[in-house]
Amino acid sequence: MSKENVETLRLALEAFNRRDKTSWIAACDSQIENFRPREWPENAPILGAESIWDFYVEAVQAWDEGAFEWGELLDVENGQIVANQIRTMRGKASGASVAWSYWVLFTFRDGKVLRSEWFADRGEALEAAGLSE
Image (cartoon, rainbow, N blue to C red; front, side, top):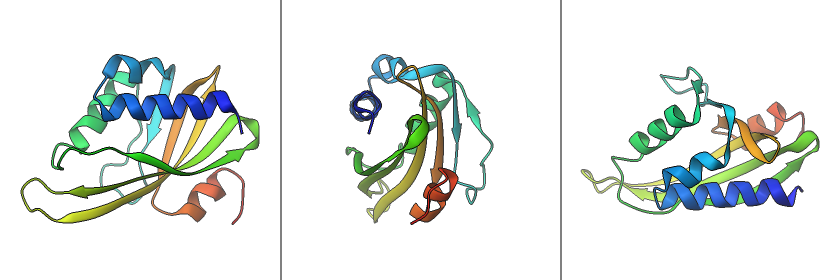
């Protein structure tokens, strides 16, 4: 697995968890694209690091503070990584606890994230990467 790409993901997630926008954007390619899960009501691609950052920050506003983590990381030939992002979250208003677990296919260019594709299911993420379970 590309140590450089794994390190980029680690640093980017740490930056997001502390809301360090400058460091998070530094991990992104200038042409970055984010593709939300197909089943989400608003699933059009988000283009550009600033827009993606704004979307992520807005998406977590309803939840108590906490840190996202990387679970499983799988190397894909051609410089991609399939990663499981996890976190236990509690709603600010409801107090309801939710286990967040999404799979992301990351594509890199020159050590930076060029594309992120989100999936609710591990098998779908692997299929998108050209792998099977």
